Amino acid sequence: MAKILFSFTNDFFIKNQLINGSINDLKKKNDCYFIADRKKVSIYSEDLEKEKNFLGYYSLDENLIKKYRRFFWIRLFKNKIGSKGLELKKKKYLKLKLNWGDESLSQKIIFYPLRFLSFVKRNIFYFFSKFINEEKYTNFFYKKNQIDKKIFEFVENLNPDLGIYFAQGENHGFIEFVRACKKLNIKTMQIIENWDNLSAKNISNPAPDFLVTLSEQQKKIAEKVHKFSNDKIFVLGSKKYDNFFKLRNSNYQLDIKSKYILFLEGWVWADQEKMFDVLDKFISQEKIFDGIKILYRPHPLRNENYNLVNLKKYKNIILDPQMKYAYENNYFNLKSIPDEEYYASLIKNAKMVICGPTSMILESLILEKKILVLAFKSKDYYSNYNFIKNMINYDYLKFIPSIKINYSLNDIQNDIVEIYKQNYNSDKKEIDKCLEFLIHNSELSHSERFNDLIKKLT
Image (tube, rainbow, N blue to C red):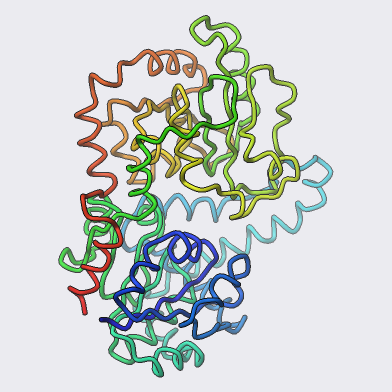
C-alpha cells in the first residue's frame, strides 16, 4: 500500500480525476492524500473538502506568480525543444491585437493606445529575452525564490512515497510541488490530461520523475519533442476514454427530434457566422440532407468575449439543448460539461461530425463516426488552419480513413458530401488500428492499470 500525495491546481482536475476518475478506486488500495491551490479551486471545493485525507490549501504569493509568468514566457520564447505548437503560441503573443472578440469600432478605438503599448512592451520583453541563457536564468530563478512554505510543509509532514499532479502545460502551483518533492527526495509523476498538451506546452522544469500519457502517440511526442526518457514514460489512457469505449453499445436516446449532423466547436471562433451562413444554405439545397439539421454544440468553456452567433436566423442550424442556458446567458464553465453518457449519445445519434481541432475528435472516433475536420485559413492568426498545421498531435489525422480535412470554406460543401457518402465499415479495421495509436484501451480497467503502475513505481 503506497502513500500518495495528489496536488490539484484547478477545478477541472478535481472533476475529471477525483470525482469522475480512478482516484476513488485507487483509495481502496492506497493511502491517498490531497492538497490544492486555493486561488484556482472554487467550483468543486466542497467535493474536495469532504475527502477524509484532504490536508488543506496553499496560496502562492502574487509577486511570485508574476515572476513565474515571466519565467514561462522566457521558456516559450527560447523554445529549446523546437515545438511548432510553442511557435504558434509565441507568434500569437507577439502580434498586435487591436480587438478582443466581436467589439464595436468605438471600443477598438478607445482601447487602441493601451493595446499598442502592450504590444510594444511584449516585443521589447521578447527582444531582451534573446540574450538570456535559459539554464542560468532558471538556476538563478529557483535560487532567488524559495519553495512555497505551505507546499513544502505538506510534503515534508506527510513524506509520501509518490507525489502526483495533473497538467495542461506549465503551472506555478505544481512546479512548486515538484520543487518541494525533489528537495525531500520524493518521486513525482505528471499525468497528461489532454490530447494536445504535449504539442503546445512545455513539460515542467524541474521535470517530474515519471510521465503518464494517454497514448502511444503522446509517448512518441514526449520522446521526440520533449526529449523525455523512454523508460520514464508510461502509457495509461484515461477512465474517461475507457467509458466512451464501453458506451459504444449504449442505447440511450436524447430528446432531439431531428436527424442531425453534429457540429462540435473547438477553441477557434473566427468566421463562425460566415461558416454557419454557408452550412445553412447548403443543407437547404442538397437533397441527400433533406430533413437533417446541423446540431451546434458550443465549447462548454468558450471565451465569453466572443459574441455568440444569433441562431434564430437559421432554418437548419439548431442548438444542443443541453447548452441552452449557457448559450442564452453567455455563461460557460465546468458545469456546462455533461456526463459521458450524454456526450456519447449526442455523437452516436449524429449522421456525421463536423469540428475544428478539438479533443472531441477522439470521442467521435471511438464512437465510430465519420468526421470532417475544419482547417481553413481565416483573418485570425489563431485559426483552424494554423492549429492543424502546427500541433503535432493532429498530424496523424491524415492517415485515418474516416476523417477528411477541409482546407477551404469554398470546398466545404463537396467535402461534407464526400465524407457523408463514405462507407465506414469498409475501412473499420484500419480505423481501429489508427485509434489504438491515438488512445490507449485494454481489457484491464483504467483503475487496475493505474494501481498496477503505482505498485511498480513504489
